[in-house]
Image (tube, rainbow, N blue to C red; front, side, top):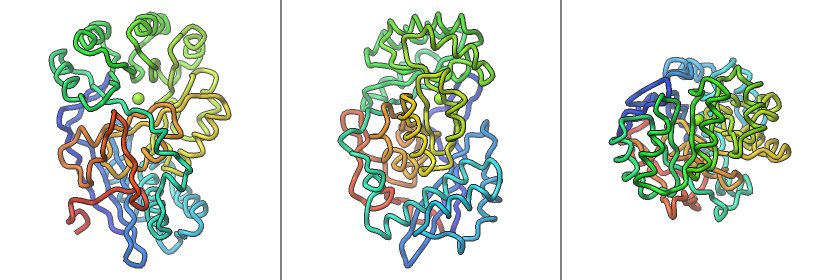
Length: 340
Ligand code: MG
């Protein structure tokens, strides 16, 4: 296994309700079998607690001789059992194993998961919190995308929405990132957003406000989606009565294998499913995009927000990521010295 620490540079500083950054620490990994390479990555926005150091330390514990492409379940159980947390680092292993296995079998990720590329949902393009003029500029930059995701949780949220609505009538989704402090404020915002062609609201309240979320769910006419409140499969049962759906991210779920199980369980529970990202390169974005046709909403925009993506940017058509017939994840390395 070869690893490559990296910093994915953002075109614009990215701000959410309680955090700002200009780049994202990444570790790319490469597994090899018989001259075939499988790629994976972990993306680690600092507030989540993982770093290049923790990921590198995690990878040093992996004995690649114990990985078996013919038994992915056992291999991924072994990876998961190596340490607590490290969900992003585990996701990198999961991605590289899937990529290598499917390249070896000469098939694609979307075929492996029986995901129909023609059912690809539109992806949103995310606008971080910024000066209103800069947010308007970003709306213009997002012209290839048909839906906008707007980060809220400020003291001037209504002004932000009105400002965007003054120049765009695209449908929007809102992510409050736990930034609304009371259920009364949250329902006030939800009622306002319903009038603004808002399709859903992500994570309005803090993780410990589940009773308030239940209250909000009874009253809201817009679907409420759990993000920070739902990381892995086991979290779904805790939050299923308090949200209308979940936002699955590979970096939270430890990768594709568990993300797929989360989609299945959410469907059984009649929960809506969104698939999102955490400032990844095209490697993890194309992996998530292979699952996106099984989901209701996609938020897979990071390749369009960075300046040094070492993999080719996917094609976008009518605001939808186009899956290809490239084997494995389908990511095409353009920075040939990434693993030198
Ligand atoms: Mg979110």
